[in-house]
Length: 288
Image (tube, one colour):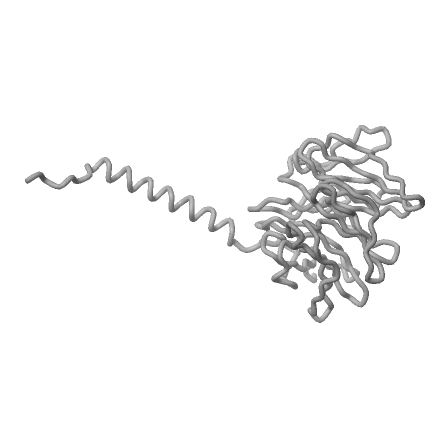
């Protein structure tokens, strides 16, 4: 009778090391997925709205309400109105990756990040089409003109729509995943290039210098009296950054999961859409 095969001591050690390595990798990714968001000293956050699938863009509405887009694909996306008491209603449905909202002219412009989708204007419960784009994401209304950013890996564009006559101009091409655009309090018009890890200034001469570099997938920018806010659209260990008016960069929130828009509220607090965890966070400075 043949003796049963038994692994050698060396093979048992090798197998044990492989199992240990797999457990360590699994533990690392579990840690990244579930480790709680961390706030910097002087700041506090809390969850104000949960179960908002793929929360992406936001805009304030009347009577303290909030509009939030659910960035779902294939016509499953929508824009929700969340009242101050938490009541929810759907105001626009049947969208595909709605990824930008901006309040203007008594209504809200919204985008969809798919090819050939309309950039719509919601006003008085009715939706009209302003123009069509390809993977339109970020929006910024400048009064007489509306800027829209098309998110492509190497052929991204910035469009400019003129309210007066509906003319549409292409002001930049060949960008690497541009995702948002905003006007700052100092007059600069800034936009992100997620694929390059930079924030740039849109300039009249077309030079568009980088104002921030070395970022991890910067997606959304917003300016206010505190400075420039940037969210990083990373699945793990993403950050919310603040570059103050003196040019000093600080991480205000870390360990985020695919954060998207940030908006400022009149009471000095902020709302951050954390799409990777299907929720909206409230961020506020701690009382001194």
